[in-house]
Amino acid sequence: VTLPVRPEPQGRIHPISQVIDELTAIFADMGFQVAEGPQIETDYYNFTALNIPPEHPARQMHDTFYVRGKAEDGANLVLRTHTSP
View 1: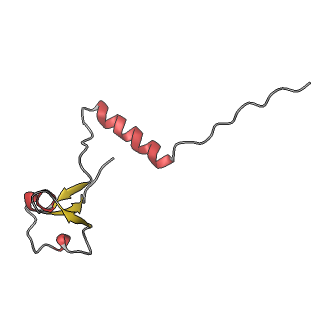
View 2 (view 1 turned 135 degrees about the vertical axis):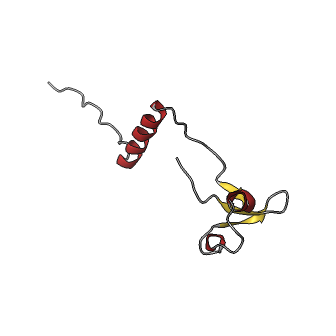
C-alpha cells in the first residue's frame, strides 16, 4: 500500500525581505506610511530643491547615476539617490 507524496513548499521569503516586511508593518501600526515615488528624478528635485550646491561632491559623475536623455524641460535625469522599499 502506498500513499501519494505530499507536495513540498516551493520556496521561502528571503530573511531580509521578511525583516523589511515586519518593520514596515510595525511602523505602519505606529502611524507611519511608506512613500512611493519615481526611481528616476530630475537634477533639480534630487539636489537643488534640497539645497545641495552645484559644486557638491554628491553631484559628481562617480557619486550619482546620471541617466541618458533629458526631461521634457531639458533637465538632467538621475537615478534617485535615496530610495526606500
